[in-house]
Structures are given as structure tokens and as C-alpha cells.
Amino acid sequence: MGKKILISFATALQNIRSRFFHTILSILGIVIGVAALVAMLSLIDGMEQYAQEQITKTTSLKAILLQPNLYKSVNDVGVKKQTYAYLNYDSFVKLRSALTKPAAGYLYSRQNAEITKKADNRPIGTIVTGLGLPTHPDITIIYGTAFSEADLTARRNVAFINQRLAKQLVGKKPEKTAINQQIVYKGMVLTVIGISADKDAKVGQLLMPITLLPDSVLKATPPMGIIEAGNVEDVPELKKQIENWLTVNMKTKLADFSIITNEQRVSQVAKGFLLFRLIMGMIVGISVLVGGIGVMNVLLISVSERTVEIGVRKALGAKRQDILWQFLSESITISTFGSLLGLGLGLLSTLAFVPIVKALIDVPFQMAYTWNTFIIIMVIAMLIGVVFGTYPAMRAARLDPVEAIRRE
Image (cartoon, rainbow, N blue to C red):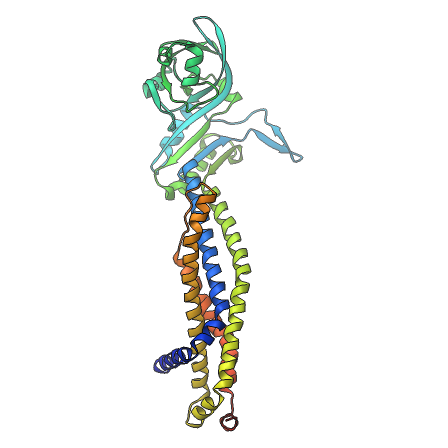
């Protein structure tokens, strides 16, 4: 059986070679359709890769965001709750220590507030953030230092500020002279021990140990927790552990907290691109369909031209199955040849397309070539060969040898 198939493909290649230009013209539809499909899939894969890179840069896929739900739904209207559960520093430390997978985390509470400079009692509007870590991961200290774990535990009245707030405190003096200045916030006197780079921030920011914030502030602006998993694959398990801990230890319903992971964003992007890929694939598939009709046409012409040959072969003992295999193999060979030409044309067109995109839009965009694209092209080639070659092959196989020879 295998030997017959190989002979059929060898015969098909010979027939294609003898009608080369006729075959090329007949498979132009497949070439153009497959080239468009390859370019489209590579373009979408590149767009998806770029989108995922941007998401990864702006948000960590390892991060788990934990925040209290402050509102309830009453007749489809969001109403703020009178009482709600929230985490303080002590409870967050217990939660973090209960996790069995490697993870780090911090707690923070942010609010707009008015502070005063103790020296002249001058009011300054700023953003006050209570931190459960010595420093935020995105903050760089340029003068002095951040508060330490010991300061956090001992509730020492220290803080570090950004350059904007430092300028507001010292005026025309050098920014670093704001070190050791004293600031009053809600009756607490805080000593500035460090200054952070603010990257042209428009407002001042003050960061202090979250353990200094009174319960009234924590209730008004409930802290948000960030758990950073050691490995991306541990995120689902850590999320379950957090849910279990909240249910058992906070004596509240799980619905009172929102636990959010950035996996959802990646999943939504992937679904969007999958939908785009399917829709564009169906549109481009029309060209491939036209190419398949071209294959059927060339094979029907081939059957008419080779009627006598088919009759002689059947008269000499060739079975219907042999004739069927011959024309099916020829159909598959033609469609595969056209698909490979289309694949090459599609790859070349994408290489030319990328510089045009970069010239028009200043983004680091690249086409992405995946094995899925190549597998899809080969499957399409086989399907076109079988689907559009079956009818001409069956027509050839059903020819009566006597009638076929009489057509000479």
C-alpha cells in the first residue's frame, strides 16, 4: 500500500512538471490565500506578544492584589457599607506567614491630606502613604534613607518624602536640607530621614510606617495588600490559601474582599486576539477556497486530457483505487506546492511589512512566527488536496476503459 502511494506521488510530480506553467497559474489562488493567511497570523502573533510584554512591564504576573469591598449592592445600586472588614499591619503579617508557597508582600494605605511644617506651621497639601515595607519596590532613595523594619515594628515617627515635597519644605535651599525637617500629620510629629526620586511628580508625597496610622485613618482608607509570588505557577495556589485564611481568621465572608490577579488581564488579551484571529482567518479563508477551486479545475482538465491514458491503464489491470490514489496524490501535491509557495511569499511580505510599521508607529513591534502557523498551513494544504481533489479523482476512477480509449 505504501509503495503504491509513493508511486502515485512520483507520478503526480512528473505530471506537474510536464504542465508546470499551467499548474502555477491554477494555484495562484492558493499561493495568494496562504500568503495572506501567513502574514495575518504572524501579524496577530506579533501583536499578542507585544501586548503581553506591555502588560508584563506595567503589572507583575506574580502579584496578587487584596483589597476590601467597601460597597454593597442594594436594588442594583452600590451603597457604602457602615462596617466592613479590613487588614491592618498585624493581621497582614499573620496572613503572609501562613502562606506555604514562597511569597513576599506589603501593605499600604494612601490618602490626600494636609500636613504642616513644624518650624513655621505652614500647611502643605500632599499624598500620604502608609507602608508596610521599608520602601516601595518602585521608589529610589537619593538622599538619606528609608525607614527600617525596626522603625516599622517600633512605630517610630519617621518618614521619607519625594523631591517635590522636599522643595516645598525648603524653598530655594538644596533639596537635601529637608533631611531632619519635622512635619506634623494628624498631631504626629514626623522626622524626615530620606528623599526619593519623583520622576517629575506634580504633587508632594510622604511615606511613613503604616503602623503609625490610627484606626480612624485605616477605616476611612482601608489598606491594600500586595502579595508577590516567588513563581508565576504558584499564584493560583496562593490565591486559594489567601481566601481560606480570610474566611477562617477575619470572621467575615469572602465576598467582603476582592482578590485580583493579573492573569485575568493576560487571559482577556489572549481571548481577544483569538477572536480576531478566527474572524480574520475566515475572511482570508475565502482566498484559500478560491485556490481550492483552482486545484479542482486543473485536475478536471487533467482528467479530460488524460482520458486515453486512464483507459489504457485500466485496460492493463489498474484498479479504481489506483486511479483514485493517483489523482488524489496529484491534488495533494499541487496544493502542498502552492501552500509552500504561499508560505514563502507570506514570510517575505511580513519582513517587508515590519519596517513600514516601525516607520509609521514608534513601537518595538516584531512579527512572531510560531509552529502553530506552519502546522495550520500544512493542514490546510492537505485539506485542500483531499476536499477539492476527491471529485476529479472519483470521476477519473469511474471512467469506463473502453469508452475512455474510444475518445482517442
